[in-house]
Image 1: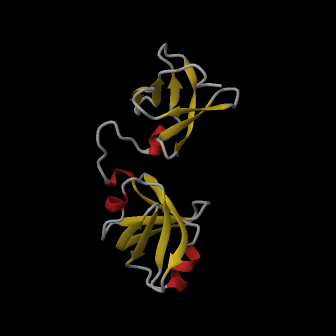
Image 2: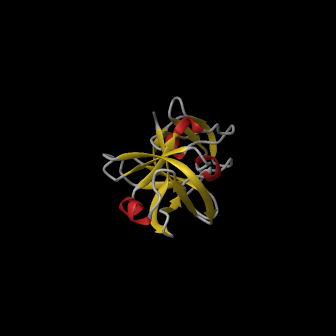
Image 3: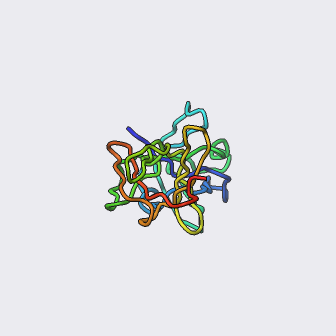
Length: 170
């Protein structure tokens, strides 16, 4: 089973163990649908607790989730700062839509197939999603994840071909 990160529990709300989760998914409604299974994990990844979603609502960048298994703030308190995951294949993505975790680690190449670096992370800025690419000299550069710069994404071969413009890699 492959898990994808949905967010991180930042605090609780109310007395019934409702988690306030800083979201890192675009699919909150699908992921936190009543009856779905989510997984809580501490940073060491040693503890993975499956929970069944009881209720969900969203407010901006935060998701508020209760579970069938936890019904009090006292019980839920020990999971503050835990990460929240779901099974990767739980929802079907549209064409040209990717999981951030699938993009991370991809080789980045230019139009001449010259290797430029590796995707270190996918970051969300107000204007657009951006790839942070690390070069072999450990310096990083950013590539906006928009059609103008992204020519081809091949998840199977873990490569992303980009259009390089002047100043992009400095």
